[in-house]
Image 1 (spheres, rainbow over the protein chains, first blue to last red):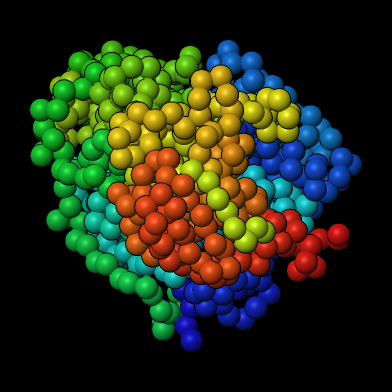
Image 2: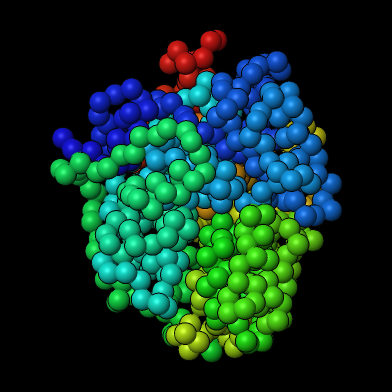
Length: 432
Length: 187
């Protein structure tokens, strides 16, 4: 029987010729990623279970990227970075991106590909639910908890229930007012926040394959918001060109078999999709930007693993150029590489950073997760009272960005930028 | 694994995400330090909006002020319980507060897996919607071998779905014990 990409990757990593949905198998892990929020807990369990002098199973395969609580005065948060440092030193880990050094990166899901740790056909686990972002590189990538991560640290394996695959095909390249964020919000609105629970979400069709690697990452990033176990996109020349520019490590891409079996196949025409907004307090509470026109905003936020990549800022800059924002607007680059991009990438004779400054937006001095998940109360851009915010991030559950009385709307960088200018939710076609 | 689990019910609705179970600003405390970890119990469920905390009436504190243990031992949830972030701090905070079982209509994948693999409590799936049927404070009894939940306050009994694939991990007491049995770890 034919296999999907997800089934093939898992079968290969279990040393089997095939794997079918529902099989419980132990897979070999290529990369384990952790960060400052879940790393200390993982390390604690690793030491308790394997002993205080135990070594990780493969020091080349453990990647530690502090990114969550970096630019804060919270002493517990600083202590957690120290826990990571001590462990990295003890274990002599080569892939640690320490705070306050030239190696510091920022948001792990964007840092992983920048540093060459995402490769087609591999298995990546991370102690963060948005680890699914890396499915954009044609690999199996998913989020796990501290206990599972500690087990991997010791033995390099984890049990996995092979998921069924839901296939989502998009026909036609994206119209100039749409972004991958609109496509994934549209899907989540269709199937609901538990519409893909326990399943893989595979994205295909010429609409998907015409996307840049960054946009493909946005698509896979939010599969967790539909309950998906992993997102995955076929490997093509775009993937290979990116991966080869970052790493010389060999890899083996996978493709669906002709007779692969899917849980379901959904087909969309990109021309039928409108700029989409998820209203408070759930990512599946979707409407079009036009339907929400007039909703007053206190704040706009552009950042995170979902919407803080260079292409996201380029999109926002196209709209913000030559305008002033009415809503308080916060710009948070995901990584230090993205931050450099803001200072060097030009649009019509100005850098992106200049465009944002001239528009009256506030630019974060540090790359991190920042207010996407609220964080300590001194976090840049955090919603500390009943504010109404439109954001390029991924979740709008009560309290996600800080106060549980705040209201968060999720949208693409185009829609967020257009809305920032008007101070109310606005369809980006008004400015494009 | 206990055969009979007894306790008072704390009822929540649909899509209770891990930010509501333990808000992100609290994820900085040590889970290894016996005193500091109590803070997770203290702040468990502190992100749930007041009107949705302890249904049907709401405004019921899960953990009293200045305490880290809840007077409730069994959570009744709706659909997609534990969605959102992969933070294992969420099921662990619930365990620290004294939760021994959750009975929900359905779970988000990572939360379910963390609950089982970490051995924090048993996540049961109900065969019907219990939010609205059971009230916060009701006296509950779960018979694990029979797969039933009895509300001793109302006298009604409900069936639970079989634990299926994860039963062996739950019986072992978590994924480490299970991996030892499977031969992946030296005992």
